Image (cartoon, rainbow, N blue to C red; front, side):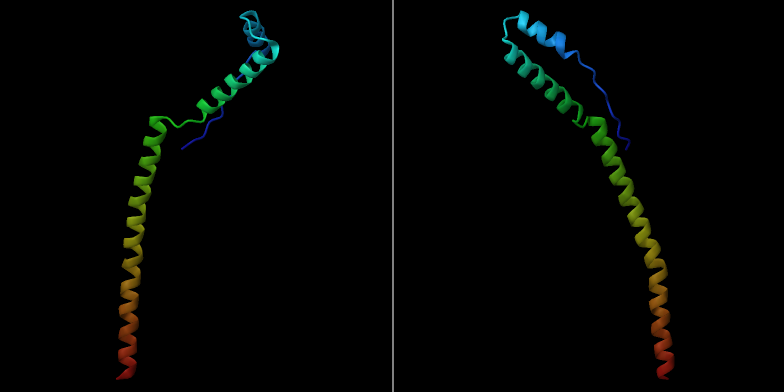
Length: 93
């Protein structure tokens, strides 16, 4: 999964001027502008359905890979253990 950065450029001055023209006091307009920016930034950090689907696919692929690795380990460890037991029994005779 690739992460992408998004840069947002906002003309806060004109935004504040428009709010003041609509009847907001300067402090209210500035606070409103800040809140709107926070909301936009928050929305950019939300995962989409395709992001979630991609993560689910990666998890599924990892499970398959882990299963294959488990088989590979057993393929080598079981004969090794059986061979060691054979050697121990052979030594005891």
